Image 1: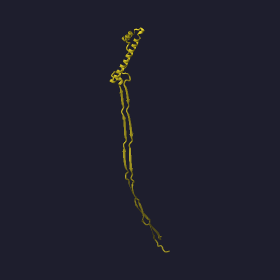
Image 2 (image 1 turned 180 degrees about the vertical axis):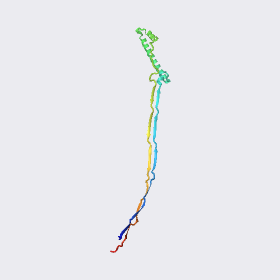
Image 3 (image 1 turned 120 degrees about the vertical axis):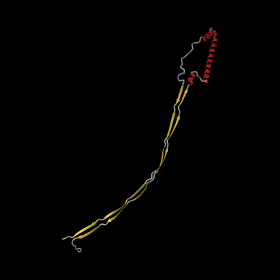
Image 4 (image 1 turned 90 degrees about the horizontal axis):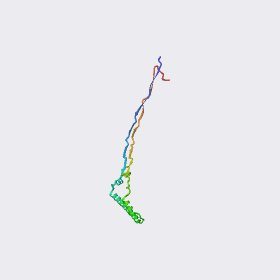
Length: 191
C-alpha cells in the first residue's frame, strides 16, 4: 500500500539592494600669503681716537725755543740782571756812604769784584723727565641696532565641499512561495 505523501516545495523570498555610493568632493584653494620683510638696520657712530703730544717744554729745555718764548725769556733775564745790577750799585752806594766808619770800602768792593766766588753748577738731565706731555683720547664706538621683522598677511580660503549622499534601495528580487503537492493515494479532499 502506498501511503500518500505531502511534498512541500518552498522558495524563500529574496531581497535585492540597489546601492548608489555617496560622492564627496573637496577642493581646497591654498591660502594667500603676503610677506613683507623689513630689514634690520645698524648705525655705527665712531669718534676716532686722538693723540696729543706736547714737546714744547722739551724744545725749550734744549734751547730750541720759539721766537716768542725766546724773546720773553731774554726780556725776563735782562730785567733780572738789571734789578740785580741796581741792587748791587745801591749796596755799593750805601757802603760808600758809610766811609766815615774808617773802613777801606773801595778796596773791599774792588776785591769782591776781582775775586768772585766759585761758580755754581749742577748736573741736570736734559731734557727733564716729563718734559714731553702725552694725552690720548681713545676711540669711542657706539652701535645702535634696530630689529627688522616680517609683516605677514594671510587670507585663508574656505574649502569647496560638494557631497552627494548615497542611497540604498531595497527591492524584492524573488517572492516567497510554498507549493504543496500530494503524492500517492487518493485523498478525500471532501470532508
